[in-house]
Length: 298
Length: 277
Image (cartoon, rainbow over all chains, first blue to last red; front, top):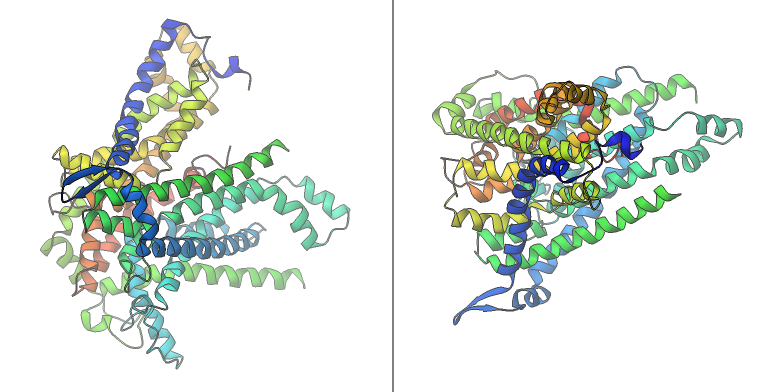
């Protein structure tokens, strides 16, 4: 779209007053609620309370490297993110490919698959506490009906199965999102490349690999980017399901920061850790965005 | 493999996916309607039980969940209204006025980037700020925080809707002597009303579902939202499963209504217009 079509007339001083007035409230709110807190957070991360009073320095950041709890929480976050992302992507892509063909009642399927991801995360936590409860949960109850011994299957209460359980819950909730975005991407692909592939005599697999996948790549990258950012910061469902336990088995970095700040009231250290999470999120999304832009220039 | 077989396999798989999505939610619904004896029945009864509304009465009349529900509604509606007003003005400026120094693009990207911070990163300083302002345990603190949280989303969505709109109508209104603000209110807003409504619904959903800020900023009954109220019951030692399920089931109702209302815009909304480009 040429510039002159899109915008009103060229700027002069009078013309800029109105947009400035329109933008001012939004910029003020964002400065107060995003930028100021960030600066505030930097200053508290540089302070440590000692017996002699508050000292300034990088002490909180130095602590990170020798804090095994922090490193373990970081490891858990990566395991959680990678496992959930892989499952959600593969399942979501399969579902999208399945539903992209002519199917009666597609609207109903689509609407129903949306429900898990729209639910409040706290409700998701409650739903799965009820499903996974070793005493009256539907999962163990159903397994028992098939004659399976469920004594050791205590799910979120078991150190071995807790991580698997919280990952499964994430997959349950967020696969539909991956599915939706990829389905929208699939439906935006024009029919011509497929017709060409058909004329060339490509097999279904070849068509998928050489036509569908490359054309779907922007959607794939966007959905992976959005999911990765959400997975790295996961808090709500795990808080309800296990509170990071049993022991430390499902403690992710957001939970550890929460505990440090609001249970131990060590705000400086919590702020320092939150910057590690922020940096991690930024670096990983920058990589995705680079891939995305590389694609667009071709 | 014939087409018919392939098609039936599709339906079987889809039905399985559907059951997998919905059965857990349905299970919670049954727990909220079962007596405490029936909740613990083995094998689990999915259909055969005598429904009772006792837990709903217990949660919303006898216990404080009615107040939490009210707080959730007030916070969600007020913060959505604030974010819509502030955000729509900014979006209009970004979509319709050519700003110097390529500010249209730069400001849009900067606004979007503020939404990308992990919540816990801002939760720590926001807690301290609200403590200094003596706003902890007030609905106002949540309204303020959610307004800021939803604002980038409103700007980004509405900017897209404004950009999609041909500007001839506005120009006609301007020629007829309408002011810019007049043209925005009388001509443009009615045209983007569906987009505005969809954006509003998204903000309502986000505010309604939000948990971490509510947990950090409100710990007393005076300003507790429904999710925090439910979470408080979950982590106690003796858990009233029926009460909790009843509260959680009620928390779902507005979400279901909203989700159906914005189905069309869902993908665009959830990926903030990124998919559409």
